[in-house]
Length: 177
Image (cartoon, rainbow, N blue to C red; front, side, top):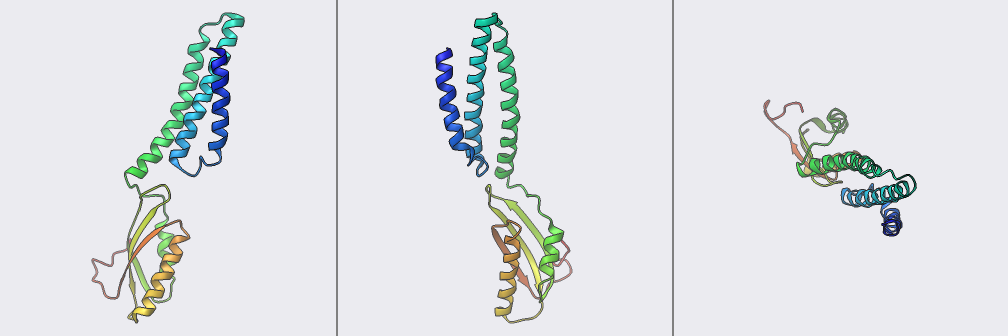
C-alpha cells in the first residue's frame, strides 16, 4: 500500500503542476486540478497513515485523515458548483448599472440609456442589451455612438452587446434602468 501511494502521489503532483497555471482560466480545468489535488492529498493521507500505523499502531488515523481530506474537497467543490450553477442558470453577474448608464449618457448625442439586461452565458461570455435614446441624427452618426457604447462596455468585460437606438419613445418605454 505504501509503494502504490508513493507512485500515485508523485504522479498526481506532476499532473497538478501541469494544470496549476491554467486552473484559473476555466471551471473545467479548475475542477480537474481539484480532482488531482484531492487525489494527492489522499495519497499523502495513505502514506502518513501507513507510517503512523507501522510506527505507533494508531489505526484510527485512517478515519481521521479521511474526514480532513473530505472536508477540504467538499469546501473546494462547493465553490466550483456555485460558479457552474451561475453559468448554467444564466445568472446576472455583478455589474454596476449606474456607472454604465453614466458612461453611456456622457456620449455626445445620447439623451438617455435604459432597459438594461446582462447575463452570463459562459465563463467569460457576458451578454448585455439596452435601449439608448439619441438625438435626431443621420444613421452614420448613430452608428458611431453605437460603436462607442460597445467600446465602453467591452472595458467592463462585456463580450456581446446589443444596443437598440431610439429617437422617439413614449414615457413607458423610456423608463430609467
